[in-house]
Amino acid sequence: MRSLAVSFKNLSLKGIKSNSSNRQQASPFRVMVHKEVADHIRSWRFVVLIALIVLTFITSMYVSLRNIKPAVSRAADPDHLFLYLKLLTTTDNAIPPFHVFLSFLGPLLGISVGFDAINAEKNNGTLIRLMAQPVYRDNLLLAKFVSSLIVITTLFVSLSLLMVGGGLLITGVRIEPQELLRIGAFILFTIVYVSFWLGLSILLSVAFKQAATSALTAIGIWLFFTVFYPIVVNLAVRSFLPDPSFLSRDEIAGYNEMILNILRVAPGQLYADATTTLLMPSVRSLGPLTMEQMAGAIPSPLPFKESLLIVWPQVSGLLAATVVCFAVSYYLFMRREIRS
Image (cartoon, rainbow, N blue to C red; front, side, top):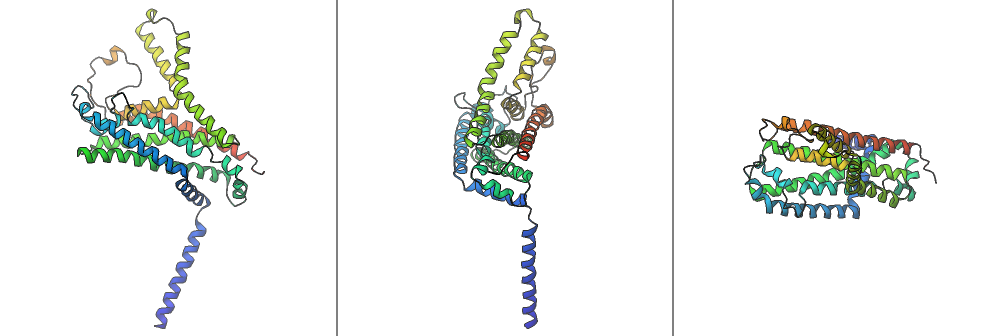
């Protein structure tokens, strides 16, 4: 009995040592990510985000179920057999469909989570205390970005699963593998789209001292690209574009392609092009097509790989813009004086 007690004591001491060594081996980056995620979850901001997600789910599900029957009964529509894709894109022109809701909700979530990531820490006096610890500046900036992205990814994945699960429970129709792949790609691209606005808001939080200034600037940039940028492009094109009656079909197609390329500077246009192609398999091109290109074409859904190749420029463009925002914020933050 004495030897057994000694062995239990040795095992307990080994367990305590292993736990302490694991705590010591935990990287500062992981600790900061856990702390930031916990702060997001415990804040009132997260409660508001949850309320927005629930309202979006209820509204989108109501619109989709109200119009899903006539949408899948159109035999002339090449996509009428994809029930769950129709569930995410069907509308009655009174309320936007699910993917249009996300195009407005995504930037707001990204901006609301990251607009005070750095300047709030500096204004509260916690940034200088944090930098006094053995923590690198790039780890702090990356932890802010990763923790916010984890929260946003969880919210959007939950919202998409609610839509698909609600449709599965109500209709009882089995989801096809191609639909599952397209919905998964749509969720990933939505996360990339939101990560751009998150990176932009973190950049503004580094550039400006006040959180209100960074928030208003981010919302102003979003409103400009969403509302005013297409108006400016249309006015500029009408001022310089020749009279269409004196142009050939090839010249008109070239001008239309040029206008689309200018509009694709806006992140919302890239997101709209990609989601339209992923959720509507019959879309074969994102630009104008000539009559020669349409000759002999049979309206049928594209394979998932072909649709992914079409939207790959949009995905790479948003990824590049996100990397640029994070690189500029890293440069500014590394050169910033954090002492009071």
